[in-house]
Figure 1 (cartoon, rainbow, N blue to C red):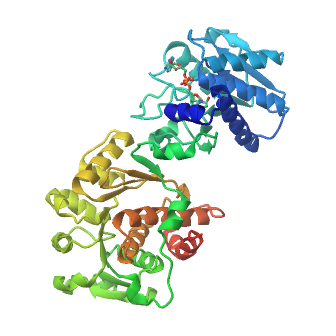
Figure 2: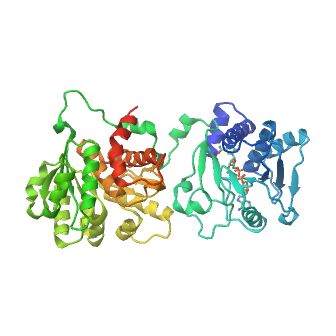
Figure 3: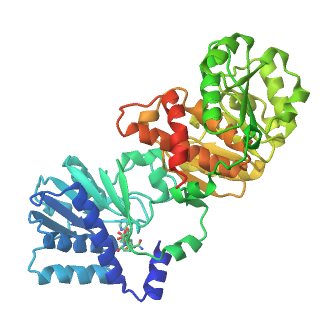
Amino acid sequence: MQNIDAYTIKHTKIKSVDLMEQAANAFVSAFAQEYDNKNTGIVIFCGLGNNGGDGLAIARLLLAKNYTNISIFLTRFGSKQSDDNKENLKRLQEMNFQVEEINDVNEIEIIKPDLIIDAILGSGLNKPLTDQYAALAKLINDLAVKIIAVDVPTGFKTEGEILVDYNGVKADLVICFQRPKINFFFPESSIAIKRFKVVDIGLDEAYINTQPTDYKLITSEDITKLIKPRVHFTHKGTYGHALLIAGNTNTMGAALLSANACLRAGAGLTTVCLPQSGLTALNITMPEAMALPREHVDFKSLHKYNAIAIGPGLGFDDDNLIMLKKVIELQKPLVVDADAITTLSNNKNLLKNLSPQTILTPHVKEFDRLFGDHENWWQRVQTAQTKAKELGIVIILKNQYTFICMPTGEICINQTGNPAMASGGMGDVLTGILVSLLAQGHAAKEAAILGVYLHGKAGDELAKDSFCVSASQVVLQLPKTMKMSMD
Ligand SMILES: NC(=O)C1=CN([C@@H]2O[C@H](COP(=O)(O)OP(=O)(O)OC[C@H]3O[C@@H](n4cnc5c(N)ncnc54)[C@H](O)[C@@H]3O)[C@@H](O)[C@H]2O)[C@@H](O)CC1
């Protein structure tokens, strides 16, 4: 971000202090949408760097918007004050506003505002908090009022492993500048961040997009470009034939959910390879699907399918291992999920045989079973990136924010999806969507981006007026979500 900041300043001839003003303005607009009561008791803690400079500019802009109940503390814990910080302090003082300067946390009188704005340290953090900084973070957290952080909560590392014994500010909301920081997407960030909002501060977007980075946020524009429209004069053969190998005596629902998702994501034909005992259920609930009883599979006939998914509710018997091996031998576009991932982790020699159009969809436990235990998500995503490259496949590491690791080393981050979707069968639905998209001719990379996004988006639409969302509801919502995502 600092490079981008410098580039924007140089090429748009904007002064750094003016960029700070833009950032402060963007913060204040987002803040005012959340807290519009002008009598809200606000305490702003500022440091001596540019994060603190933002805080001072924010104070001035809030005062200009008639937020009257504001106190400001400038923490002089270091010796180096940035130029833009000095300038913003001067501008505030010129308004005859009293800024309380403190050299020691003990100088702070006990206060209990409605909320605190944290602008002590931002993305410039270069070591864990100690001494005065740690004491101030504790004091702020202990006040038990709402905390809104500017760009980054004080003490939160924006990249790299998040400390288990985090001692920084615990923010209810982070209003961050231009791009979310990578660490916001890891579950461990929840100790420091309940929610974040990203605001545009006018950095050069074209330049940002040219910057080398492994990470890419999936956007709705990406999806619009990727969805293939249904075209005149086409027929079921145009949209591919998907085979789903799934289900077992007590887990037939997984096969049904997955198959229904496959149909509704647009596959021309869907065949479900399931035990004989599941045939009645399949025929009754999904007359559109075809069945291939698992007891009588002729492996040579599997060549005709455009894409195959294996795993949901499959079970772990020896026949399933044989089935997995045969399916991998076909070298077709393939989704390996759930029990088939566990079977892979017990037979790791199979990993190297996976076709280049393979998508693995592990949740955290399946991932660790497959590639070893990890202490945190930062490590896990690094491993996923390495393994996707090494094996030449796509790995979808599922969580609130799903990481899609590509064979090129690129990591796409999906932001759709919500906690209302935390229920059984969601993974089965995703697998059905993915195999459907592969069968329709999408490359594994595209299918992964589209599938993960649409799955989460359908859940988001349902969660707008529903406390929880079931896997079956997501399946039903899917065609609407796909249609809406086209434009
Ligand atoms: N392009 C951007 O991203 C922009 C960034 N701005 C702000 O600038 C911030 C970054 O500012 P700075 O680089 O000045 O850094 P900070 O204001 O985050 O920190 C100030 C200085 O504190 C020192 N420090 C770091 N960790 C410490 C620790 N644990 N204990 C004691 N001292 C420590 C460092 O020397 C650091 O440079 C961003 O978070 C954002 O708020 C905005 O002003 C506008 C543009």
